[in-house]
Length: 323
Image 1 (cartoon, rainbow, N blue to C red):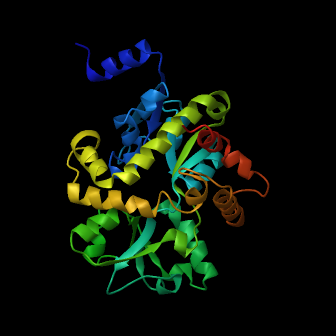
Image 2: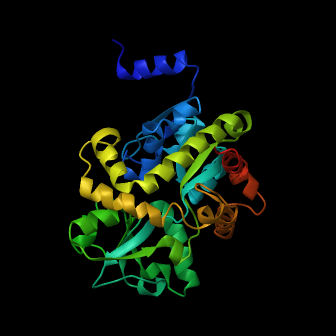
């Protein structure tokens, strides 16, 4: 008997399926539920695609490295990650976005809330290094001296907030926020989108070359993805069970996965997707990200256009041909 991986490969080859390897931006959990719903319900198979999703997370390979080196055909990042990859010479381009509102947020204890930029002065905030320029620029526009805020490195466990070691903690409301809430910690959530950082999360990317040469394949992949996310949104509790029992990493908590699964309704079918369909993508967030990097002196004026960083062609074609 062939090992599972080789058996799957043999099945795909025997049926003439085309393989799409997607590098996940984090560990296999409910935030990626729509991908696995598409596998569970045969939507990729219907499109003649053998879909593989490779776990990310601590120590995992990054989006830009995975796609830029050809180890994966597609991956997920955010708007700023797409722009910064191109700035570093890796020709990634966005062609869809799962979450129309990014769940990235500064979380604080409810009795010491950080709800607006003016609240940050004199506080200690755990934040990824890559986000410090963005938040510092936002603070400056709100007449808050960035030097009045103490930034410390952020880890994946929000326990430092619950313990009062920091005043604010950056994470995903659908992940670390759920962790805190299921531990009985009362928190305030200030989404980065609401603080002034426009953008999507779960931004789907591939190289310029792949988008040019495999547009039909990626369009078919998107059709399956759309159906998968539709199923997830319609069946959040069942999707949580599937992640815990079948598709997710070991040790996932069903209560937390169920809560997070239901929260997807606040992030996936909203905004541009509510008007144009799931996974839709618009130029505006990319324009804003490019402009921010120009203003910050990280990018020369005119060195990158919005069409360099994103395209609507594939998601538009997927919706136009969706059966």
